[in-house]
Length: 330
Image (cartoon, rainbow, N blue to C red; front, side, top):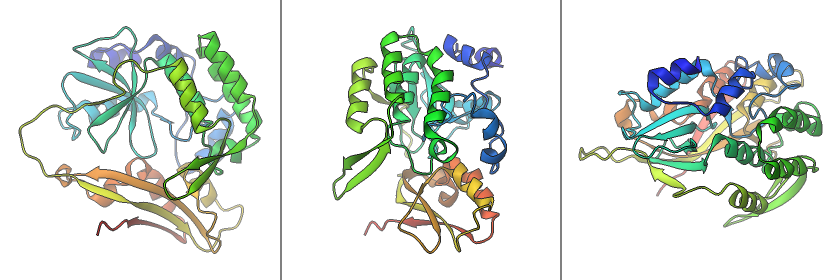
């Protein structure tokens, strides 16, 4: 399958990605509202690629061809420069894509991994290679762990990350990176503080924001610019994009019984729960993005992004409401 994609789109996957495919590390099973209940139990003993990441969601190889077309095809609304080819292999919950980046004018010995932002015209370089991205993602995924995250709600946290380490460590070739990952994954969960403009936010994890930034800079510094504009230059005037700033809410009222299947659908959503709400359940996701109606997609649907299928699954349960509350610009 991977060789077919390479031939069709004229690129070569990193050898490590072929190895991951051959080892079954790219198989997450069928993702649906019952994934936690029916699929996850079969994966937890041998976790596939970044199973417990809070932001990275694997794109199965069967769906990569379709996603390549969405990003790079003639009908794509992203307007990607013909000098670039982005091959997606994962995505965030907000609809941005983790991609291998191929620059036709400046080919590299190693293929960088970038985060292609769907609501702007920039891509962020995360790592110089897939090997370095392993180090990046294994550290990032234990930096800020939601209280409702799969790794802490389904089974024992220590056992879960030990299993993850067992399947991921063999792909980290550099000894110094292996030692750092092993040491950090051997720590206990603790609480950290993050100073924001108006208040102090607490978060739990195995390392702080400051330590994460220091380790990434020291061991996998990004070569060249850390971000770049991926769109092609055009003289055609377009409608200025609308900036959307608000919060998506999923609310369940009254609180369901403990064995209600709605909890499985909420876990699949992987949003933070608002603990201050006690008369029901409330989950939210901050949404800040640009929208241009020339793409023909209603903005209400556009903001759902990668959450659309999971939101639709939740709407099938009684007493579930989904709303978007936009911040007034006045």
